[in-house]
Length: 404
Ligand SMILES: [Zn+2]
Image (cartoon, rainbow, N blue to C red; front, side):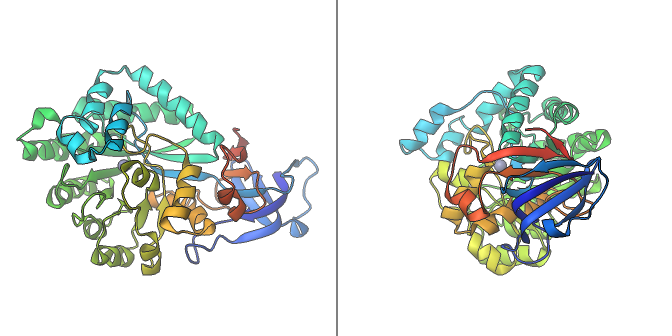
């Protein structure tokens, strides 16, 4: 048994209660055996156990569950810093995409990149994320857009899963945009995803979820319905990029499809939001993308008041969110989405775990779950988010093992 004691404040972040209910325990301790938590509580109640306990002093700091980045587009080649400047000068995301920039451009670069180069880049980013306190990352394909390259990106994630400490949950996002070679043949592309790609991904167990970008420049709600149905027939869970630039009925579709999460939601309708609440779908909000696109952030207060569990993630990608800094997304969720620091913490722990189907294993600190946690150099959650520093995380533990 290993024990972390002298924790100034332990935020357990169990699922029960509201968005801001983080189940904080002052002057706390946590004990784990092997990879799993066996006890959490006030230091004064810590059971006296074996002498060979490993005892670690948290020095009065804040301890939180390992952070979960539940929405990233991790594997891609190249960057698009020139488009960043164009958008600052007033060109819109959709104009750039229509002119051959945007996702299509990253697809060309990614197809041309060597697999080992993609793995090395992702590994470097994952270790940076781990230093920020991140212990689980959802990673989407979506820059391959053909059978060979989509499978190759999912293989990159499988390699990373075997070589990196950070846990990775993979999502197939072949329905990101229509690739150039299918211009004018969108029905054929959708059929290829449903009849060829999804069965192969399922047979290899290469992804847990299937995601669709529902947007004017990408896929219609009807196409998404077809793709998610094929995914479900093959045992893949549903996720959705919904209502980012326009209200395309994405939130309602996510609820109808039984999706674990509806992501973005900047333009979601009131009707869509109440359907999410009834379906128990997690709303994944992505405030970094709102900042980079210069658009209003997701209506987090409306979501919370409607009873939708809200998560926060980076959306790390080379176009609209070229940073993997989850604590930055947390700050922006507080300031732009008007979420309290406690609500934001729950959004990157247990709600993020629910958004990727991992809530039974991680996302909160309680007996039976994995000992994934971060030691934060702050006295409490408010102070951590308020006094934003490049990195307040002093140590990260994954499965009881110190990895930073
Ligand atoms: Zn995204």
